[in-house]
Length: 265
Image (cartoon, rainbow, N blue to C red; front, side, top):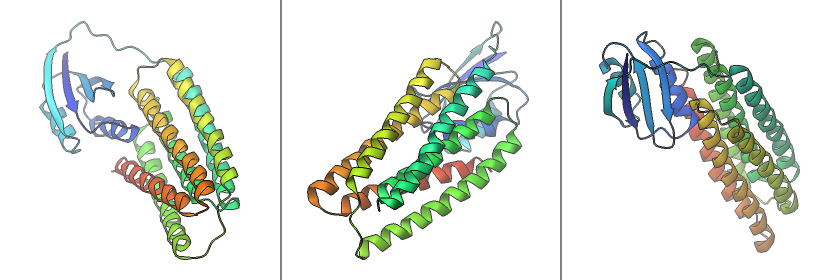
């Protein structure tokens, strides 16, 4: 048994971690993958040499480099508590999907593209958590099919969102209801905070769980952005802060959709 460590400089969210799992899934000599998300490192426990592993990693264009390799004869693969992880992931998926529906509905009612865009980001989170669920004992083929459908669906919604933003930029629209923006975004912020707490409380070292924590931390920043936009709408009596934050979040959603689509290849 060999232990080989790689530096993967562009591995910073759940999509990259899932792509690495998929690209290496067909190699029979791999026994275990150990991800260090914070330090952008991947340790592979395998038999034979590591050249083929490196070639597949390098094909992802994640700026992968070889660090070192050593013997790992005494390594024992630890079994994950999959039942507990599945229960936790289902919970955070349900919270995110609920807020997708809530923010989408209130976004249209309050005439806020910031809330609508954030709802699509919540949908993206739900997709990621769903893929993470399939990472806990799921099949690669099923995960790829779900990723393909979800990625295209997310792109279509984002495209509709961009059209709506453009229409509102050039047209005369009712001012967004800043109170609704702020209140709903605070609720979403609390929800993401609860998800992050639950994920951290699990103390799981599995990559898909660690990546989900990072993803949720980024969502908290987006929630704060929508809250700030609501405050600026009130202070400036202008629709533009809402449209600007909506555009920024939509670009984030599109970027995430393309990453999810890569999982289906």
